Length: 133
Image 1 (tube, rainbow, N blue to C red):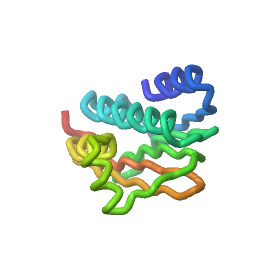
Image 2 (spheres, rainbow, N blue to C red):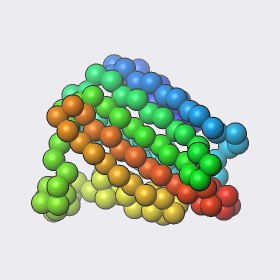
Image 3 (cartoon, one colour):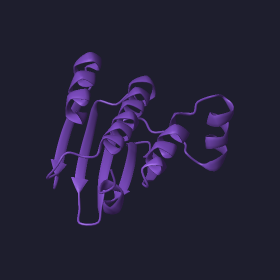
Image 4 (cartoon, rainbow, N blue to C red):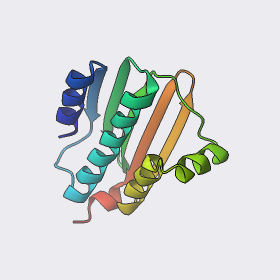
């Protein structure tokens, strides 16, 4: 599902995109796959609109204690300090807040790091959350 969405987005935008997985030995619970897909779509939308990226890499890795989805681009980056985040919220740009809420809704954590060389969005979901229906 995630790989198909990424491939479709790449064809539509012309931005090179690569997908990799490791350690996934079963279908993820629907609530987790749904929220991962929503975060992926929001991130891809932001990349398309703002990043000026030429490459996006998405990886989903299941480790003994957690699942981690990482979305990395080579775009322009942006400021993510407290003042900037407040400004984004005040102007109605709630995508980052929504992504954080989606991660937390499945017991996970959201992190983002950005520099002039690109941005990395990471969702980490503990194994215990993946085992719940």
